[in-house]
Structures are given as C-alpha cells and as structure tokens.
Length: 372
Image 1: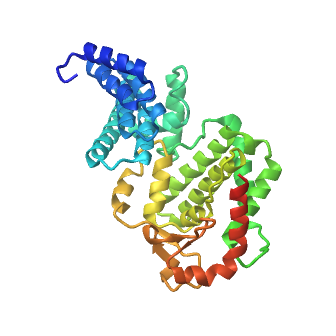
Image 2: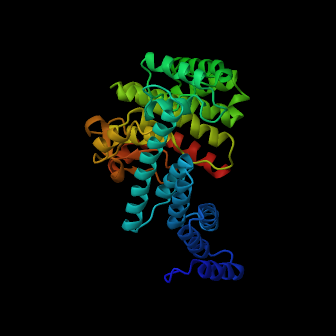
Image 3: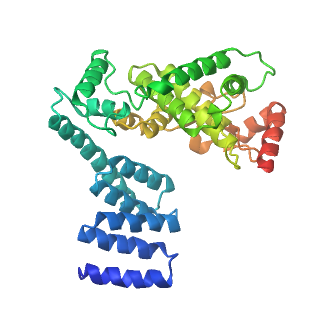
C-alpha cells in the first residue's frame, strides 16, 4: 500500500481475510486500498464489514462515511459519522478528521441542493428550500417541477422556510399524527396525582395510557412512532429558533419519551430513562440544542450549537429540598442511584435525604430491570 501498489495490497489483504475473517483491520485496510483506486463502492462494502466485525472500530466508521460521501450518499454519510462519534475514540487526530469530514459532508450536501435547484429552474431556490423539498418527500419520486414549485412556494410564503424534517407531505399520516398529538397532550395535562413523588413522571404515564388506549396498534408500528418523534423534534427546533425555549423543551421531552418507551415495549432490554426525560423537560440550552440537532435532517441548529457547546450540561438533583439553585448540578458531577440508575443527585447527602421518597420507585425500577 505504501508503495502505491494498490492491486497488490488488495490481493494481500484478501488473502489475510481468507485466513482470519474476523479481523476488522484487514477489511479496513483493503477499504483504504479500494479508496485509493477510486472504487468507492468496494471501499464502502469493506468499511461496512469492518464495523460489522467490530462495532467499536472508529476508523471503520470514518472510512465508511468517506466512501458514502464520495458516492454522494450524504444522509448515509452523516448517519455513519454520528454513529462513529457516538462510539468515540481516544485518538484526538481521528476525532478531528471525523468532525472535519462531517463539516465537509454538510457543506457539500447544501451545495448539491443548490445545483439541483438550478438544474430544475426553481426560482430563488436555496439549500433551505431544498431541505424543505426533501422533508416533503419530493426528492425521492419522479420529478414534477410544476408541483414542486407550487408546494415549495406555498410553504415559503407561509413563512415556514425549512421545516426541519416535519413530515407534512405524508398526507395519509397527517390525521393520525394530529390525533396522536392531541391525545398525548390531553393525557399529559389531565392528571390526578396518585402520589406526591415524581409528578412529572405521572404526567408522562398519563399521556402514555391515553395514547396506548386509543392507538394500541400504532404503538407497535415503528414508522408511526418515528413520524411522531420527527414532527415533535421539528416543532421543538422551530420553537427554539423563535426563542420559545420552554415549548422547545416540552417537545424534546415528548419525543425522547415515546422514542424510549417504544424501545421498551418492543425490545427485551430495559434501560431507565426517567432522569433523561426530566433533564430534557427542564433542559439547559446545551442539552436541548444537542438533542434536537442530532435528530433533525438539516443544519439549522449548527450555529446555535456553536454558541452553547462550551456551556456545561446540567442535570437536576432528585432531592426536592436540594440547596443548589434550581437543584441543578453539572451532569459530569452528578451521582446516579447505583441500584436503579433512574435518579441523579448532586451529593451523597442529598441522596440519603431523598431515600424515603425514592426507595419505592427505586425498588420497582430495579425489579423491572431484573425481569428483562
């Protein structure tokens, strides 16, 4: 490979893979050789295999994202990059390369939108308008310039601009989303408190009961739940960009809650998430922007993220009598309950003080975890 004999390198790595097909490095290195030849499809296949073999192999994600990017599979490349960053690495240079690639993918994706706009003669169209077209589902169907122009101009005249992934174009699903949204919010607000503890949890439990009673089959349908999550995330993003922080927090917490609850209902694993729901419902801007930005298909929160990313992410101490302002503690310094991991505290003293209130919920949560 160093001698630029890429065909020779490919043959050598192929022989090595035949001897050990569980070595992620062999697939990654052969991917690099294919990439050097400009065979991006083969490079992507080998990079994908490297992360299949070893899901924590950071370099495999980088090479897969690069190959997808070169094939103009921008959405797939961004998803791969985010997966790689979630896996993480201690190598700062590799992290730097991955973040640089992410910026390059986003910039090129926007430029491709502009080129497409010019090619189809849609007047005054920009990247944001074509993100709108993507959210309407117009880019994955036979071209109809007249209809595209009409829908885009109609939405832009209404001042909507980018809709951040809001699925307004899925008309058969529109009625379901509106009814689900109305039922969830109605259930959330219609609560008769059963205890004096964890009142926020009772709101979400009430919302779940209301929607599961009315939409039992839809709660089992991943596409339906994904539609609701995407629309709530889009609404939260719009609210945030218009300075409606509390409204954005609420939508983010709603989206996270049903996303996680769907996983619990349809998976054999259970990871407590009540603390994360509460963190979003009362989120600091860094936490809120990070969550929404990760879930929207556009780059509309990139500027906002740069403004808030230096601020520490905060968690709420579960002791209602905590002396800290707003009971907020830096998340990196918060101590989880070691038994249920669904409550966080600023100190050992606060955890002890809250135990009489927390112990029943702790026991129930621990039992659920043990049964899964």
